[in-house]
Image 1 (tube, rainbow, N blue to C red):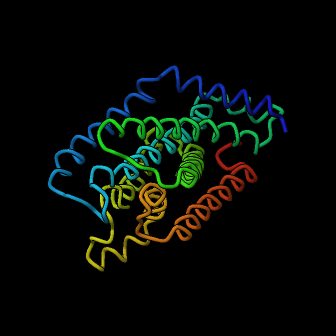
Image 2: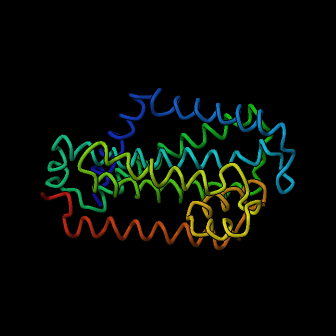
Length: 253
């Protein structure tokens, strides 16, 4: 494996992240802080507990996931789209770096950036509510799996999009609504039976449920199902990326 090539891509992407620190890190933290103020303090004061967990603490895993999904997709898509837009993608394709090493560099950097944001938001939440993590290993596992999976998903969007507008279509029209409807701020068990059944078709429900279980041992689905659905989605994304590099779709024309 060409580790030097992977490191070069990874360091370049991380350098771009720290060069735009306010937009990359501070902005999501400010947005999440406002969520704490609105949902945790204003609304949480009227809702005592959900499944034995104080409402302010209950929404912490959902808010971390909300930021993690959005940032993973954004970082993953822009990281590969910009070389395509500027034409430097051909330098990557002609360099002694395999498709796997390119994906490792771009997706690894996108996942690392979003995980850093997620951990900063977790640290920020301690300023507002008492948060406990019952299973740190499972918390980190879901954090890594989700960041890698949605960075891969963003990577696919970045390869598919042929304009800056298209980079935003799927995150804005599909992912963000699914995240809000996936139980970020509530348990889907409080929904009417029909909407509860519909919610089980939302893949984000399984990510948030598994992640929330690692904090408080409460979830809308079992841990095994949540983990299985996360892995299945990651394998689907990996298959799509493999097909794109195998066929050269959007890369060689």
